[in-house]
Length: 96
Image (cartoon, rainbow, N blue to C red):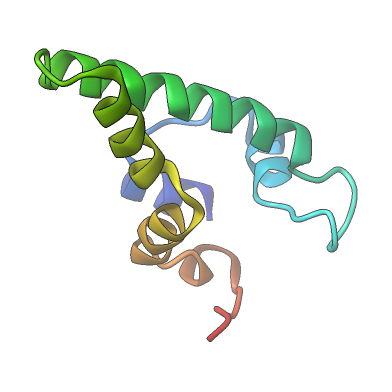
């Protein structure tokens, strides 16, 4: 699973136990991803904010905030995650 996921993401994971935790929902087992999700959400917001700030130097703060909110909202990220076909890495079934 890990090698295929690393190839799909273009990222090498150094601690595969953290990857497993990150992919585990709290309804499934412990350890689960809530604390990592909190951290990841914060990092994602910062990275997206920086990209928007650099790419759109003339946009006011309100417009930048709306763009960031649209990019990091749950539905957008869900669609991106589905495009990676996570079920092919873990044997998961996707919900319809």
